Image (tube, rainbow over all chains, first blue to last red; front, side):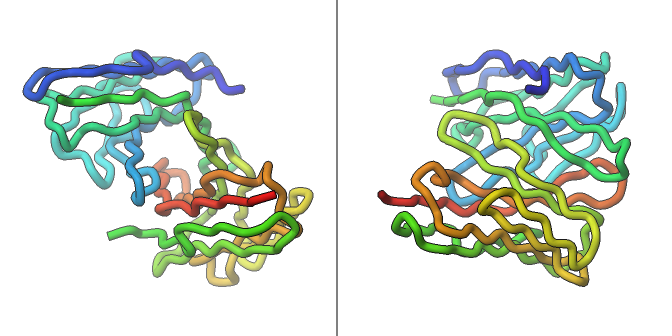
Length: 114
Length: 111
């Protein structure tokens, strides 16, 4: 299994509070991703990173920010959590040495905003 | 707007039946992957198809990439209860890194 660790695995927070989710990899992969998963929507890309300090927005980036100061860590921050951000968040990593992307996922973080 | 449309979204069948899941787009992808996800776990990669018209087999699962590289299908022969799960297709474009997923197909195979 790819070495990906998400923390925390579960979190309950109050509306309006900041929340940071962490993704740590031991594979030295170039690409890292944050997705959210909600019923009926599959996985929706929030932000992704293609290198240290290189990030780009995904489909549902509003209300989220990311940072990648080291190859192994990719942080997702909800500046002011809202109930619509209650979801399961997945981090993924990938390389492209074969010319295409194949993602390996963490176990997920279940976030509840009350 | 979902860039990748999967159908059907839900499928409930009896053990031994065959099924096909479709993944369609109006965009061209350089590669397309299929993942399987079980409850409480992250998705796990099953296969990647890269060449238009490519067919790959994984035991009872057959994956096909459309000639124009805009669509793909997953066919399961003689489904078993162990095939139950969420199947997701995902498309990437070149080495830019962006990977987009479809909504998923929830498969339930009853004994």
